[in-house]
Length: 494
Image (cartoon, rainbow, N blue to C red; front, side, top):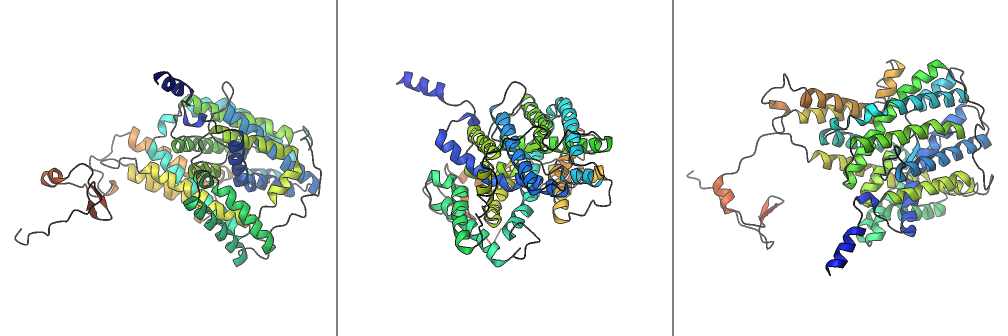
């Protein structure tokens, strides 16, 4: 008996992310990850390709290149090689952070080749400075990580709402009851499967809900598969298909700011997913994850893609499914590679209505915010300034969400950093944590209004009457057997 126990202990994964689920389960969960982030990963090449004036066929190749590079970057991040890859369940894809900067480069007459050149140089500079970022992990206590995780979820909610409305604001049916109703149906299916399904069905609730939602959309006339057969079945991303990169100083400088923002966001995502799955991330592992981001971003333009980063929406999927295995995300990397090589498969996935993605996104992105709140619940707010750190950082992070034009009159470098709610909250939380918890000179002994409420006290008499197993539920005292303990009425003479 002892020998069997020892064998089981030796084969059990030392880290939750190292659990192996089997090929079938891994690819099922991996496909769920791909569906969750597919709309996000193709949005950037669509925007940049159209702004560049590329033909529709070349825009398709741009999308394929981004899928292909997302797959390569995901494999590197999840499997890892020496010095590269965090070995965490993080899906990599094209970063939204650089869209405004890339459009500015195009508007300046640089062309898409200048974008590629700026990305290569800025990413290599980012690779050189990752040792600085990996040393700051001690400045990411729960008061910082919880705040950033919560804001990640809040930042993504407008995306979910836009998807639920139909995705394209210029479409005549954008925001129609049919689109929102389809999103609502998908959301209800997720909730029902989560409640009444078996363990496996519950964990696959997002994927199953999107499949069922798509089937319903076909009958509603909201899903169009007519373009699936249009275009090549197989296409390998050709290096430098769009021309050799060119290098312009202004574009490179502005892209360096984007890379700094990407490093902050990726750091937040790495720490967020580590909190969610319950694993330890030290400075070395953080650095490995950031280096994987930077080397992937530097290589991406060779195939016609853009900066790579961890997708925050997939952090929410990890939280809601409870699937901590990095190998499930490795499977999603393989699927992205296949989609990049088989545009026909990408067109099938692209046929999933955006409203269906929106219904699932509400749960996914809300789960990210809830995970941040859960982390913040572990923070001590007694006789310190943690409450004002959380309050100010969340407020700062929400500003770009509720008022997207807030920083429009500021210099481009400033708005590039703070237009992202994630990086805004991260910068503020880090700075305030340094100011109040590391540089404590000048802090009041009793922070008064910035402390968390009134300190609670229980008399020794009350404490002595409690027994093992007693608990409070909805304002009632319940004993270990589940019976309510009657409370004595106060004596009017006292």
